[in-house]
Each structure stands twice: as C-alpha cells, then as structure tokens.
Length: 474
Image (cartoon, rainbow, N blue to C red; front, side, top):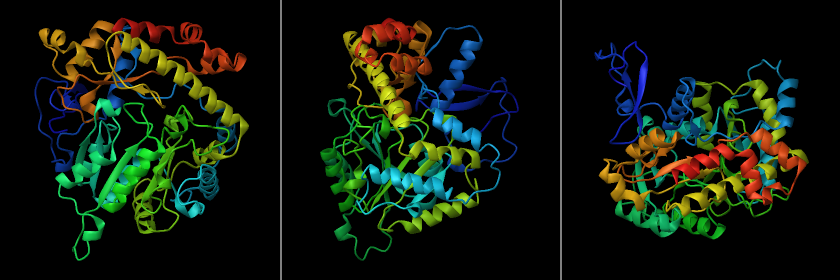
C-alpha cells in the first residue's frame, strides 16, 4: 500500500505473486505521509473483490464481459428472508455481541439436525455471529496468531489474514490427480517436514505451537469436496498434532449430493471426527444468495474445550464491530428454521448449479482443458498446461498472463491460480460458472421440475451467453 497518493488507485496484478496491489494513477510517486504497519507489506485489495470491480468498469466502458471471476451466488435472496427483513426493518437496538439469542438458538437446532459435532447437541452458547464468516476467521487468527495450515490451492483471503494477524503459515500442496484435495498422508508429511511435534510428545514443551487447519469444502477454488472417510483420516492426523480445525462449510449446503430435505449424513463435516477440536464456520453468502447481507457464524465445540477462544473473539468483536446489524440477524433466523420452502429453494439451486458446472466442465475437457468434475458450490479450476508450448511462444508463462490473455481475446474474467497459492508459473485459473440470471432459472425450474434433466434446453435458454463464452475459450 506504500506510495498510494490522493489520486485514484489503479489496480494491477503483481506478476510475481498474482495478487492485486495498489499503485497511484499519477506518474509521480508520493511517499506516504505516515508509515503503515509492516504487516501490510505486499498486501492489496482482495483479488476476488478486485476482479468484480474490474468487470464492472469494463462493462461501463461498453466492453461485453462474461463474468466468471467473482464467486457470487446468481440466485435471489429466498423470499422468507426478504419477508422477515421487511418485518424487522425498524429494529434499531444494539444486539449482544455474540449475536441475537433467537438466531443462535435456531442455528444450533439446524446444526443438530445435520448431526454435526459429538452428537450431544449444540446450544445457543456454542454459536457466535459475525459480519460474515470472513471476519470471524480473521478474528480467530487475530486471537491466536497461530501457525496456519493452508492446503493449496486455497481461498484467496486465508494467507493475507494470517499475515495481518502476524501468524505463520504452512502450505500443503495438493495435486490435480487428487482432485486438489488435501490427503492425510500429505498433511502429515508436510508437518513432519516443518518440524511439528505430535501431541503425545508435547508434554514439558514450554509453549507448544498452535496449529490451525483451515479446511474448505466444497472447495474454493476447485469445487471438489471430501468423502466422510477422507475427512476421518485427516481428523486423525489433526488430533495427533493437537490442531484446531476451522471447518469452513460456507458452501456446505451447495454440495450436489446433499439431501436437503432430510439433512442426513450425506452432509459431510470433519466435526464428526474431531468434535472437540473443530469450529464449524458458515454463513448465508453462498447458499442463501445473501453475500451483501454480511452475516456469518461460528459453532464452537460442544465439549466447551474452546470456550476460552470464543470468549476472546467476543472481546475482539465488542471492541471492533460491536454486533451485526439487528434487522439482518432477525431476518437470518428464517434461513435456519425447518422450512419446506427453503428446502425447495436449496434443491433447485443445487440442481441448476450442478447442471451448469457439468456443462462447463464437459466443454473444457473437450477443449483439452483439464479440471476435476465439480462436487458442489460454483467453481471449477481449469488447467491449461496442455497448451504451455503454444502459450509460451506468445510470451504467456504465468497464470496472471494467461488470465490477461483470456480477458483480451475472449472477454472472460477468470482469477489466476497464483491468487490461490499456486506457483506463478502454474497455468491454472478459477472459473465461477454463475454468469446467468438465477431468478429466471429458478422460476423456469419451478414451472418444469424436469428441466434440469434437459441440459441443452436449459443451458440454451438460461445460460446461453455463458456457454458461448466458455465454448469460445475452449
């Protein structure tokens, strides 16, 4: 951020690290009048936010852009939430920092129906509400300053948050052959390589390291997810090394095999296998189409083992954001209540996303662009390695250069793989298959429940421009 003048900040992608940094729009560089904290060194605006703004700027200038870079739900906010927000628009009192008791109690009941944790039941005391799960994950790291374990590729904000909280981080690389999913073996090998000590050998250690494993599934940026057996194996390693796990389940209700109406064990969660060490993180941004509402939640272990951490986070929250918007919290209660209307909304959303993801995946594979088949959410992680010789011949050798080329030639915004921790030389990118009218798509499926079984008809009618853009890319 150093060197930013009062002029308009222009965005560029740093070719070394693939993250957006800020520079002055003027030709002269004016030094900052006051020094910034060293923890900001090398950081800039979040890549996902930056690409969204870039697409909007291009569209304003008359350029036709297919927005496949920003991970925002295409669907409208469910009507029960809208109705509840309208009813509570006059709520103006500060709420408890931990969150509206009714909301926390309703979330606890929702998690219990999912059979998460140790099976003894969550209560309102286990739940913490924040202005998005992103803020809660950051506040957690601020309280702990841990060594954060990051399976790569990972969400763009995990590593910057670790830096801002002055913690350390360890990358654990994954492979396309493993569908970019962390393996128990890969995790343990990396821990051993970094000198981690098993819990059984930590006795007598004056200040044992605090390890925090951040695990997202369905994954951002790859769209893949774990099986229960895979999570069980990872949990065994995490417990051996006495890790705290943040199970980031922000896309959990968008797993394509989730049985929404029954909420049975088709919903996967590592909290079942490491209940005393796992904090479940989620929110409304992705599965309830409410990214701009900014409401997220943490569920702490039922055993109370991490209550000290919950209390510390409440302290930080009380001295920073105080509490989440009162009308929003009242409205959010409707998202977690047992509701046939919400179940139907979720099922149709998942069916549509699965159809779009599989359709885009098929086109990419036909064009020799490899990527794992999606399991949920709304992302794919295409790899253009097959074309490295041809790309190198025109000077394209990094994921940033690749995405610049795709934007210039195809009018498609993608996010470079280097934004997600991949090497800059990796020819990967994140593709968000959400550039379609979600409201119109839901209405069409409501009129014809069999429409999602007719891919050509659905995609031709409701996602035509997106499919044409991907076809052009392939």
